[in-house]
Each structure stands twice: as structure tokens, then as C-alpha cells.
Figure 1 (cartoon, rainbow, N blue to C red):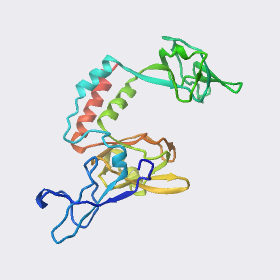
Figure 2 (spheres, rainbow, N blue to C red):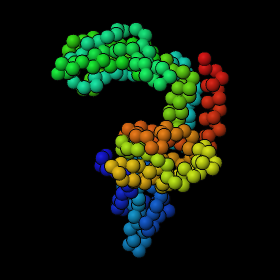
Figure 3 (cartoon, one colour):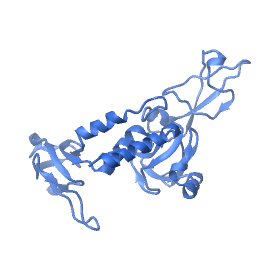
Length: 282
């Protein structure tokens, strides 16, 4: 199921709740299920079984954000980032081979730089496979938090953790990190290229992104994969588009966030916290 395309699935079943307690509708209902794994449906009087549609992506990424009833503990979140204002990045082996470290713990590292991003970052390690040696450099600045010294000079598998970089967060990065904790993140169901649907793109061009209200069932994005375009339907909490995490036409990894949605009643509060972080963060 995880590898399927994000198309609507049909599930049939019977709901044992009395009719007054059932939130489903008779006939081919278009409203997606708001329960993490609902497979039940209502048996209406007269023997008609309703068809309840929901989205496979709802099960793939079940609880990715806040509920409208859930409180946002901004003070707690901000306090956490103040006590540890770093992002920890694990550096793993790019492929199999023999590893030799070129740095050590607590050493500063610099990422890619230059006007055209042509200057490579600080060398981290070199890996040799079939007499071919490749030097891996840092992609971001920071400090080496830990190094798996026991792997120095050893043969490692692809994806094996080698070291960790402690990257100091800037004000903009702190804001983005907080937003990703409190917004509903609608994620890419597959590695593919993504575009906004024509209707959404037109509304963004006319009104701006943060005036666009979407709700479950809306066709918001087109996924382009293997020369085939597939509509992607929104399956999260209703609200305004607050953040966009991709550029239309760019390739996006599976599971990476595409957009961040904020419920209308919490939009002003989120903006207030952003203003507060901008004013207080050094």
C-alpha cells in the first residue's frame, strides 16, 4: 500500500453506530475520512450501503501536524530552541568502501560558498572503492559534534552513520523549524516533480499564497512522474496555505513537505509568534 500512487481508494464496510451518531453520508460521499484508519461505513435504512472515499496518503502520513483542538505550546517550543539552538545533521557513507576521516570532534566546518556555489565545503572524510577515492565535503557550516572513530580505516556499508555536524540555527531557520512543528505538513507521496494545480496557481497569482483556503478533497497539486501527470488531493486539516516548501517543477523526495497549512483561527497567533521570535532572537 505504501508504494501506491496517491489516488482515491474505495473502502466498504458497515457502521454499527445509530444513524444520528454517524457522520457519513449516503451515496458516493466525497468527503475524506478524518480518522487515522477508518474503514467503516454507514448502512442507511433501506439496505443502501454508502461508499466512503478517503486517501491512501492519509494512512501513509497519519499524524503529521496539529489538530484544531490541540493547543500550541509556543513558550515551550521557543524555550527548547533557546536551550539548544542547533540542528544536528548526521553524515552517512555515500556508498560502500573504506573510510578515512579528515576531521575530528569539535572542529569547525564550513559549507559550500562562493557567488556561484563553486567553492566546496570543509573535507569530512574520504571513501575508497575499487581503488577510486572520493572526498566528501560539508554542505553546511557548524561544528563536528561526534565522529565514529571506530570506523576509521574500516569498510562501511552505504548509508552507515559516520559523523554528526552541529549546525547553529539562524533566526530564519528557527522560525522555519517552529513553523514545521505547528503547521500541518502536506508531504510528497512519491519522489517526483510537483506543480500547483491550475486553479490553485491562478488564485496564488491573483491573491497571494496566504489568502488561499483549502480543505480535504481539494485538488491542489499535480505530480509529474515517468512522463505522467497525476492529480494529488489534499487530505489534511482545512486552513490557509502558510508556507511553500518546493519550487514548481523541481524534483522533491518522497516524504518531504510540500506545503504547510494553518487553521484560520490560529493564523493570527502563528504570525504573532513569528514576530516575537524576530524581535527576541539574537
